[in-house]
Length: 323
Image 1 (cartoon, helix red, strand yellow):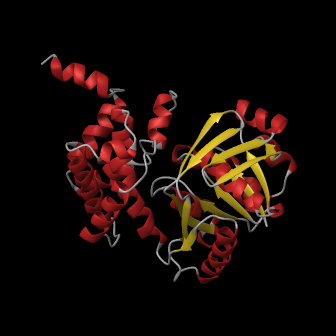
Image 2: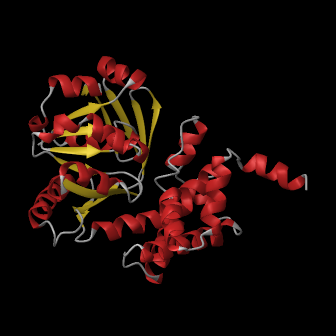
Image 3: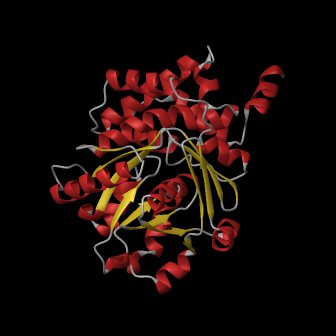
């Protein structure tokens, strides 16, 4: 099959390298120094269980829309930051409109699939999430990835509503597993996205605020119960949003994150590199829904606000000591 990787960062490049290693074709859409390095020197991906170093087809977005056709590809892996979803879909509007190309979102948050489906329709939308993977650009053209790097995907909004898309997802699942990407298909991907948001909202902003990796956070006796409380806040909002979450989901996700290796969250890496934080797609998604339904989420609001104010652990400690 032929895949288009939109958002060729750490996660997109890792999955693309796996697919290339299994004999499939991939085009990586990138920009700047990372794009130039891939065009000149190829792509290197480092993982404890996999190493890839070869020439790749890497292009800019402008080249994609001007010189390639959507029907040249079988699937888009949409790996962009959530804040870029609407703008990218607008940019690709005409390019996508005359095709039947399916998009698989592998992004953080619960707002991306609705935006994609609004643009190209439910039947061409696959919801998805990358599970237990850390992926970062070490230097232009060089990726480091960690973790089992699983994928959960499913028809949008669920398999009952889109049986043909569900069949396509099952086919993709077999292909991904054969490529060394542990993948499963969910009949209710919206539920799975909210389960991941339990982890993302409890770990990503807190990690960026404190500068700590996942293992450091969950092993801290003070922060550990805060993580659990953040998950509970998220679940309460999800239930109000019509998702069948419960206490069991909170406990399962809490146990899962406590068993993670020491992974730097994407938001922590973004803060270290001075990049915009994906706040609106994670804690912002919880807060906006909570506000509409009159639900109090004080911990999520506090951490979100501190990050908006660009306060980190050192600044916070100094501030507390001064009082």
